[in-house]
Length: 208
Image (cartoon, rainbow, N blue to C red; front, side, top):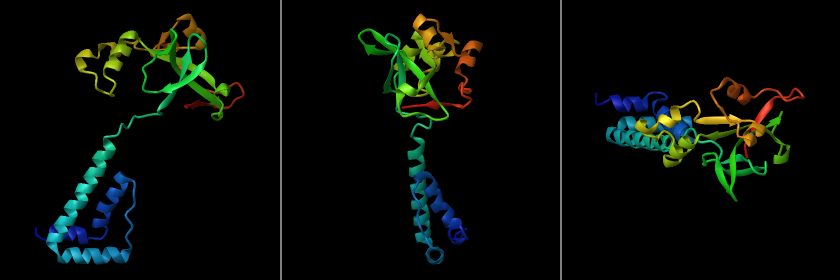
């Protein structure tokens, strides 16, 4: 047993696999030539205590980088989003962390706007088209603002997020008229499906 760990290090590719595990989680590539690796394997095989220390250090680094990466929100999207001003019918750009509808000042409200281009995303916002608009129910908005971190809503309070009308969508005309549909509704689902533009090019979802 006292030769197991050094042998793993000396085995072809054994130590390399550990090092390149760090590469995967850290995003940086440790560079070693075959000659360097051969010398390292021979040295570690002849120095068991050093082998244990090196393996422990490498494993600790791998765990550190892995935890560091996992702590980042894997679902994090763009930091900015398009919002549709229901009063002026204009598109504005705000932080994506807000739960729609949002307060735009002067008594005006904005809802999340899903924008698209035909074939590609044009640079000018004025050339984008509104696919559909989205907001949350009053109860869902209040709850999501109370618990902004993803997945942090306590199970005993999650009720408003389980209702079919917690997520509402509409066209620009429907939104101005106050006619919102549940996202899960058949009409709502068909509205959110991205298809083809009138010229036959595919609709491409665009973000700021």
